[in-house]
Image (cartoon, rainbow over all chains, first blue to last red; front, side, top):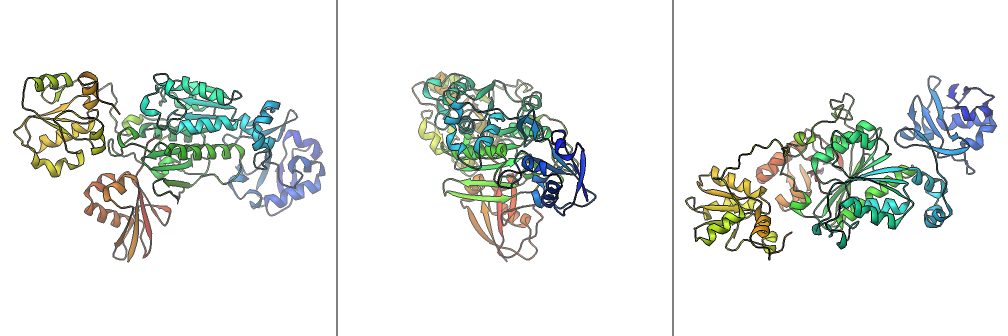
Length: 487
Length: 81
């Protein structure tokens, strides 16, 4: 016989007993025997089709059977089985996918029933599922490329509360992919723009704007009220921060990331699933992996990946299907191939492993080797840098300067400094003999980062007079030649 | 023995190929293939500590021993959003 703990609302059907015995080798058999002994329980545990009601949660020794073998989970006389409250105040409640907190499901209004009718007629969603969506709180980090489709589809689907974290302003270069924002929104805060768009889409959704940069100081507090976190950030420090905060708060993270034609998606930080650090324990050194601003991205790609993140979020809320837990999806849009990598929780993972070493949020800028802006020593060495205005003055004066543009050919086609020669950064070492070490050389790129590396390299091989153009070609256009386009 | 190597994102740009075949001595690990490729394409070397790897679509570490016909994948992290 196995002991089953009965919650208060169900005790009227077990002669007021808080624990009863039943027999069976699996949870399914045990519950069948339980309802034979206490027939009044049956309609509360099973639906008309004889399936366990989705808001009935069964635990074997504190483990949710959904994470074990569901109703096939074996049980022995040593186990204690608990049925977690399924009825509260007369209204059905759902055991939250994340925290195990019961929440009363809100009713749908007639307008909502009309709006969500295509959901309501599907068995996987239905009225109960739609009410779960209405009860759910999702936090989307970023209102950019990934955040746009995520926020729009979750809003359209009727997620009750959608928090969005961002602090950026809409730029023309965002519009190629960030479909939350339109041309008239350029210059507005992304959150103000997002809120207008989402409220027009579905006024039933409570859109909560968190106009702040997510940080180690605020992340845990920010995550607290939410059920699912959606990672739509665009840099490594924030990705590691979102991962660690998801693990520490026990919230699943619907992850997505993009680069040019390739995207990745997974669900991290669930109770028994792996986290981002199980896959990538260490961040890449700064500058090694280009961001979208540096490397570019196909405009529709965040659409594909963001919609996958939104789908996974909805599945987690509904508790249906097979989530992307322990599976890492790689999308190659150029070849249109979807590949999947099996992932396991790493017992040695510093955050979610058996002996975690990271038990609170750390300094992620430092972890990722990104120098924080503030402590940067003010060593603007006049001998190593030149401003756009100075460069213009010297060119006008007739000084002999060799201008080397270390950007990629595609960038050189958009704009350039007259008289400059293109040698992409990666080609500088092998084409260095095209340059004269005695010449005064000005190197530049888009904003000054890549050209600083080129300048370092040239100096290391004996070039004496190398100046890096501060702020790159963008600064040149701002200060000297506003007729050229910027990107 | 012969293995297929799949490369993603930036690694594909560096090698100019999404799929390569390599012959290896018995007992070779994922690390062996990686070092061989990094020898051929020195720009790969910088990625060593930040990539993840898989064998036959199953996440695996660098010391994983390979067998004839295995498919090895190397994935750099990407951060765009």
